[in-house]
Length: 54
Image 1 (spheres, rainbow, N blue to C red):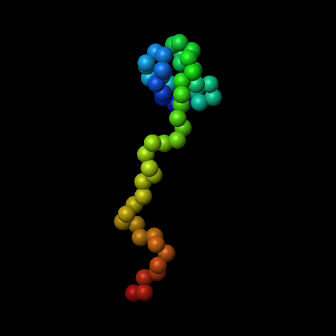
Image 2 (cartoon, helix red, strand yellow):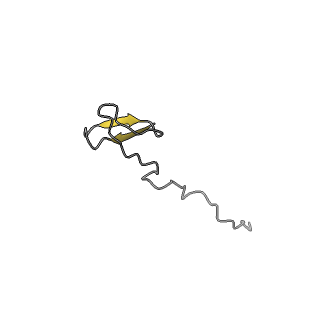
Image 3 (tube, rainbow, N blue to C red):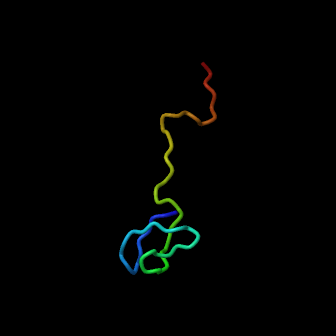
């Protein structure tokens, strides 16, 4: 399931990823599966592969 905007109705609709059709007008709704945000990473976590000598 995904939320997308119908280009015909100009409404946000919840559509299936298998058959992305608007439930109101049966138009094809473009669904984008890739995320828009970059993955988060922790700057405080020291994971550079270098061992402490102390």
